[in-house]
Image (cartoon, rainbow, N blue to C red; front, top):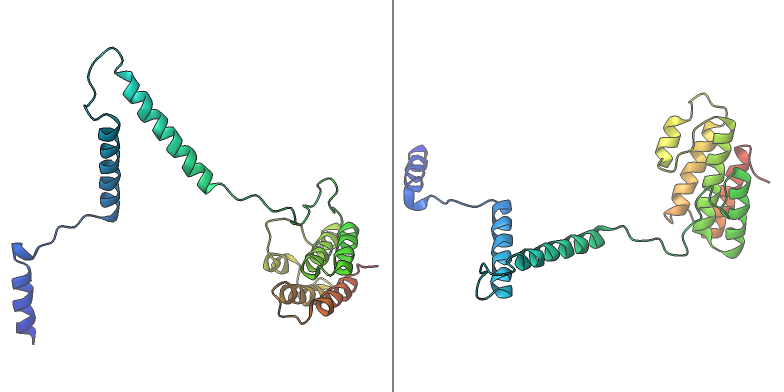
Length: 196
């Protein structure tokens, strides 16, 4: 069997079997250059002659490159949030403290907007623990970040773990009906020493 492999290796190493391939980047750059060349030939079928205004062709190329950059930036720009987005903490008219978030969540729950209510109760819990000094609120933090940050010896750590668990199951739709899940979150908020 080893002899057969040696024969195949020797035969396939011959120059007629050697494949010189381009990398993906090389093919992409070559295709881009070919496209630019074709566009230039289309824009200037007779070529560019040194005449009274040879700079015109370069101005057109620069404008085309600028337009391409604008299109790419527009395509990569983040989408604006829709008008139904949650209010941001601290903004005018939006909740900022734990009591504000709780009132906002109560109003959403009364409207039947259970997912928004769950988020409001979660924000109220975080703001309350931040106001107590048990953790530091940060808009970029995940529920797991807050669980890691809350001291293991904190007297309401178990209540917070249960609250976060219920929040996650409510938010992702595995915690039962919306009304029951949100009521459970409101009770859990009270167990954290917060709530009306």
